[in-house]
Amino acid sequence: MTRSTDLDIIAPDDPITESLSKEKKEEILPEIKTETKEECKSDRVRELLGHTKSPFSPTLIYPDIFDFSERDSDEKIYVVLRPHWFTNIHWILTAVIMFFAPIFYANIGSHIPIPANIMMFIYLFWYLAIFAYSLEKFISWYFDIFIITNNRVIDIDVHNLLDRKFTEAQLKKIQDTSYKVSGVSQTIFNYGSVKVETAGENPDIIFEKISHPEKIIKLLQHLSQNAYKHK
Amino acid sequence: MLTNINSISGILSLLIKIFVIIGTIIYAIFASIVVKQATSLSKNIRDFFNGAIVTAAYVHLILAIILVLFAILVL
Image (cartoon, rainbow over all chains, first blue to last red; front, top):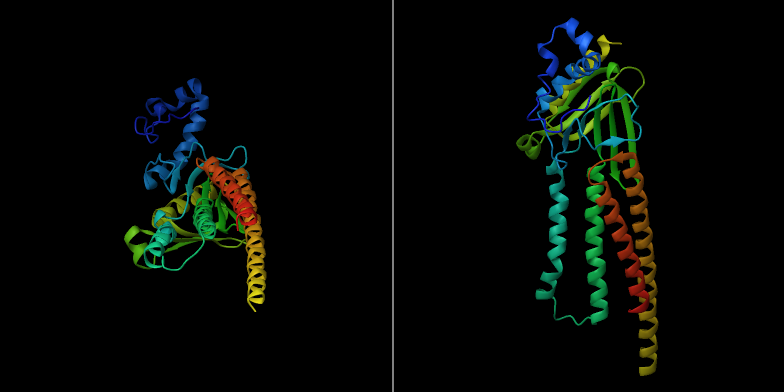
């Protein structure tokens, strides 16, 4: 069943088949019944995290465009999380300061004679370095992803362009979850780290600097309980 | 004496030029790694801005190559 793109008009919490009796549902709409069952499990996702349509948002609920290569064919993506937007502030400010630095130099240090061709080379190199720095930081943020699907949680960490890590844990194997919000900015903007402890020898998964960690904890608890029941 | 100073400064500027060219070549290699990594990540994770990121990485590589040429021809 295709889902409407306008989530404000058709609330997923109120499936169309709600008014039908169980027997009628089975007779008339067997396919819808399966879909509704699946959605009922994940109603808690929207209940906790709300709706989001913007591709700029660090929290994507049931994303239409998003996909990843390790996804199984029957696997449904519930939530995609990136670090909170505020974590980008330091590199954006650095880039802005670096961008305007040559103007200060032109005003303050113009008495030093530098040939025009060398000056042009320095400017070109300087702005290219700013571009590379910003691109590297944006890529590190953009591909640093935490995915919650109907089967598992996945953490893709990109610390820099040469350091990438993929970790996953089955929802039914989640034993304990905890979160930590520390510092001024994390308290003001409500973001923090979520730790997911799993059974066995699997490493713990830590999602750094994600928005509303307390809601993510609740969601993970809900999904892992469901997964455990249907094991 | 003046000839010696001129030749020393000539050698010095040549050395600086060689170092700058080597530096820009290393930078171009870094730019190609950025392209490789951005392409690889975009293949693994598909999202809204993938096209823009890969394009930006290629633009960066082209500018890095222009920088190498600039260092060789203009400096």
